[in-house]
Length: 400
Image 1 (cartoon, rainbow, N blue to C red):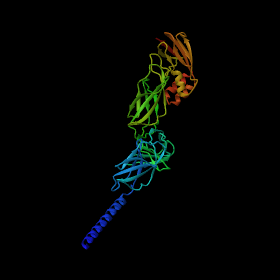
Image 2: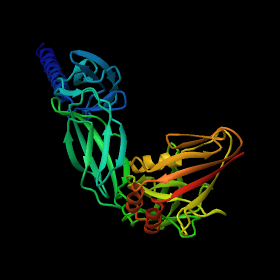
Image 3: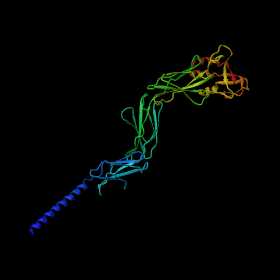
Image 4: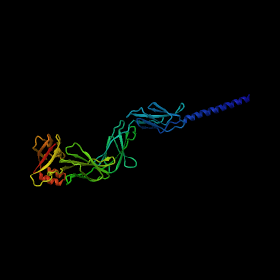
């Protein structure tokens, strides 16, 4: 009997040890399932990404937005697409092993923001200007710039534009902007970076008709860092500038001239790769080609000079009026139809060919024109026009 009692006692003792060990093992297992750490919430493409460190022993995780469980996963990150721009969200994560759950992680707060878009990056006169899209949820924008290496913070601003005055001609600048919310201390993704090479404005533009009266010479000062220059021209009476040519030189000879007397305005833009400087100041060059008759720039002591003008029926010749408008000076010409009043009509210095035939127009040049030519630094023309101010110029009009 004693032997049986001893066996039972030993068995009970063994069961007690095993039971104690099992409880201890379960307690240890539960205790080692710690709350997730390093929880981060980041704005992504149309979503918020929540991530955390792996928890030892965990088989799955539940992500809570506010008090609601929104996702169960065996990964260590999720993307929450059911979010709205400008709204603040709070996330927590719990680790699970079977039915056992860890405590919730520390909460992280984030404001949903889309990344911005840089709309324009342009060279100005001594500056680079930028503007970008306003984003809901952002109450601050951080502007970064680099010339080489890593980005440096340039400006924190609530505006959606910036003027960078710290620029050097020929230097390439790359800009990016990050939307920021100071209340939740969260940011958007980086925007797509934009690059521009800053180039100074072209100066010293000079245009003058060549002595052979078959071309106009255009010159300008070099711009540091420029690879080439684009020359634009507008003909008197036209609506806008057209591109003439691109050159690596600092001069250009325009041989694409009109048959009839006119005036041209020139401007030059410095370029490098896809970047361009601000437009130069515009330069006026009166142009009068030689004809079989007498050049209006030249007077040999006769009482009059003659210019031949060839027009088609219905065509207008507005260069005289346009020249006045170019220079912003009024009263330079007095125009009178001497012969062929049924062939041409003149109104507001515009000659209109109404019928085929020939006409003769008398043009009296005012004293103001000498000042205009002096202003465009055309000395030869200035002297000629100073004499012409006292004489009449006759325009022979042939209408086909």
